[in-house]
Amino acid sequence: MQPSPRALVIGGSLSAALAVPVLAAAPTVMDVTVNIPRLKVAEYHKPYVAFWVEKAGAKAKTVAVWYDHDMKANEGTKWLRDVRQWWRVSGRSMTFPANGITGATRAPGAHKISFTRAQLAAMAAGDYVLVVEAAREVGGREMLRIPFTWPGKAGAGARAAGKAELGAVSISFR
Amino acid sequence: MKNKLWTLAATLALAAVAAEPANAHRQWMMPSSTVLSGDDVWVTVDAAVSNDLFYFEHQPLRLDAMKAWAPDGSEATIENKATGRYRSTFDVHLTQKGTWKIASVADGMMGSYDLNGKTERLPRGTTTANLAERIPAGATNVQTAESSNRNEIFVTVGEPTDTLFKPTGKGIELVPVTHPNDLVAGEAATFRFLLDGKPGAGLPVTVIRGGIRYRDDLGEETLKTDGEGKVVLNWAEPGMYWVNVTTPRAEGEGEGPPPATAAPQRRASYVTTLEVLAP
Picture 1 (spheres, rainbow over the protein chains, first blue to last red):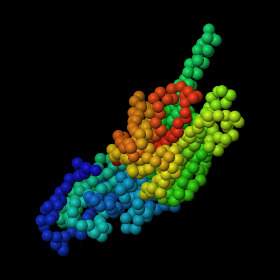
Picture 2 (picture 1 turned 60 degrees about the vertical axis):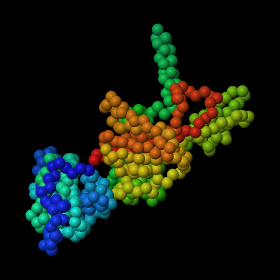
Picture 3 (picture 1 turned 90 degrees about the horizontal axis):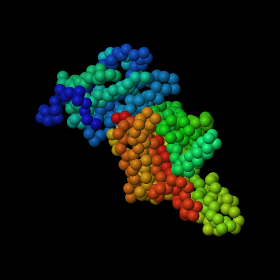
Picture 4 (picture 1 turned 30 degrees about the vertical axis):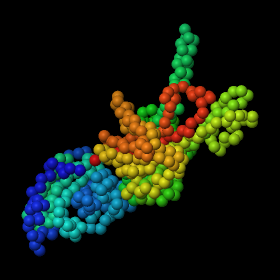
């Protein structure tokens, strides 16, 4: 899968990151801001959204999933497979709810979530891709890919913008 | 005049019946989903025999031989069975995570014998079990061959498993190289087919995407398994695909009744429906 042409890396490249010694003060948290668009549709349900991290040669690591987690008899899990790329690379081998990963769906608007190095599975230095995929009941589906380098530089970031089910998604490090 | 027309119509109808190959219509199963998540998971399956895929418009597929197996190999119940004018339908409660198999397998016996100076063919519905009673006393030159027909589908809850692909050694069977519930448009899939437990080399494979009622071009792909029984399928588009593998047929076979004197050939056919997801 090729990175989306919309995804633009502003953060340092791998070579730049290697040239700078990793100090104790290197950023340890990745902030992700996701805009859920407000849609004028006859029937609206808040989207299921999955966030995962990919690295060449490694298994995809799910870092967050927003779904209908509080329905009776766990019925909301029935539609997890509609977030189909995530389901294939990671979701289908998980159990739900997943502690520290799964949570409620979010309303339209901007949402910030943060991931510590531990949540990101103690990442080794290198090139990664954050993938965000949204699927909406009786609606569409969209996926965005944001390449980044870990450890990121404080203040540096990257962004991508969706067209339908996702608005702007940006990442930064602190 | 009316009589003449009637005779002509009858002649044409007879010709049409005679020209119809044994497998003129396509039999298929259509599951409500093949890739599933959730805690209380069911699948509903429609089963029919028709020309257009996947429209139930000709005959229902009989459910007498329909069975389902859970990922741990245990046989599961076929629930809410119903057979209507054009289709059958049933449910399977998918109580385990992993890959399930739903299959209808029918074995038969073809052949002929000589009696009183005439060669007679074995009647339809002959099986290994009733062969003895169907051959009259005094029959000589008895020739038989088995036919095996398998129609099966796979559905997966959670992660795909491969516990149900152990071959039985009878008829044509699928051995996944690519898992049949892990198919995405643009990615090639490889399957291996066995014939009676051995690599099914040179078997014709037909692949047709569903929805043919609304297009002029059938878009049928005709392939052949290689020496190891392998075939590589390329899915240009997401959708439900009908895949049919058979034993090879001689040139011109099926165009009219075979001569009664021809030695019966081992025949086997395999049908599955594969769902190819969008990337």
